[in-house]
Length: 222
Image 1: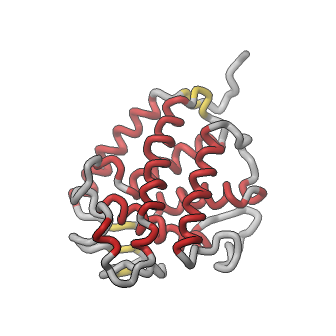
Image 2: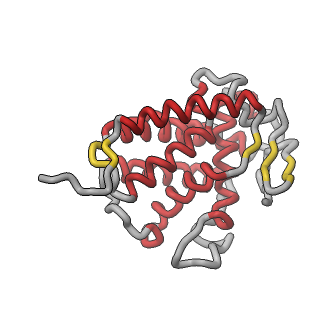
């Protein structure tokens, strides 16, 4: 798996995993005010909710919409704020941001670089070209534009403007939105034990959230 991040130090790729040594980025405990806002966790849980919306399985979406607003959009806001740190080669800019901002932006860039290889489509079984619809942003301006597009995609889902089971390939911005959270939720990041315990705790909290959401594949009766 190829990493093309411009500002990612000491990242090792071994046996198909992105291994981030202890003390490097994506550490959930260091510097976080809210541990349940760790980028990989928010992105993965957002992918779950987007999938349920796409299947038309959420009929009382209030709690799910709250999560997308409070967590997914918050994460994207942090990523956009840290865009300058992603493309800075001096290592100075990141010092002006909180760790949450830098990690959010770094994680977003890693996900963007993997979209052409990892997004799957029944209509394009050979995958996507790196120069095509899922091309990774090459400049800070493009990065900010892609993050804003993700915000729009989340917003379209929240307000109900996406038809259930819509063909995402017909809507490139939705394809990129769903693909971003799907790939981000599946990246094989290797965390230390304390992160693994945190993931279990937060996934249990997320499952409790799902218990409060009416999820059914049957349309409600009028």
